[in-house]
Length: 225
Image 1 (cartoon, rainbow, N blue to C red):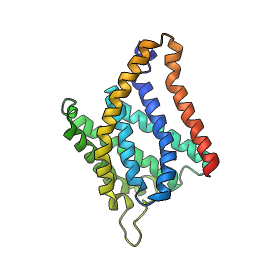
Image 2: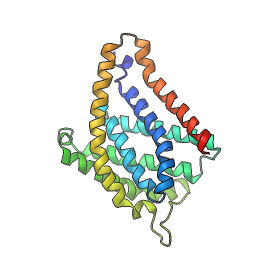
Image 3: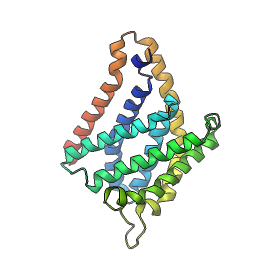
Image 4: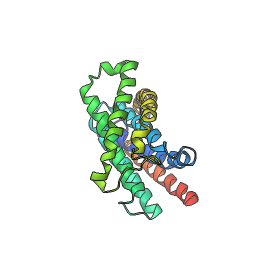
């Protein structure tokens, strides 16, 4: 029955990845308008929010990786709408950031025991530690993609490093919220499964959410690009 359930790991990953993909576009536009230089650091916290929600909702270590793959597809779709090459820094660098965030939180989730993560202090540390690893890895983007990380004006310091405290503090707040949200998602999905008898409705729930998010991305770009 699990493969017919919207609470299956794949369904959870698709739903959360799609919502993250939509938020990357919507939040990205707003943050670049009012906090351009630290937008990447704030989005690191947002990314770890979605990744932590996906893990706690599924209790599967591969789900954060699936979520990263899905949000990367959304970024590629955005590149298509903007008519940008995949190698453009506005596309490939965020995808690399998704990978560092996914790798960072998955590594720490493997190291931490699940029972320890039931406590708020452990979740706060998970958020801060994941952000620290992610921002430390991001300057390697130049070697991975050939596109260097943006530098803080007048220095040789990457923005991700300069605003690392912002990413860490934001993640220390948003990761515990991600756990709370993921737990609520898990309960809601189980209730949906119990209430809906149609296997087709359960199977189509997450794909429909993903298609709606893709349509909203297209709608946003129609009026902002």
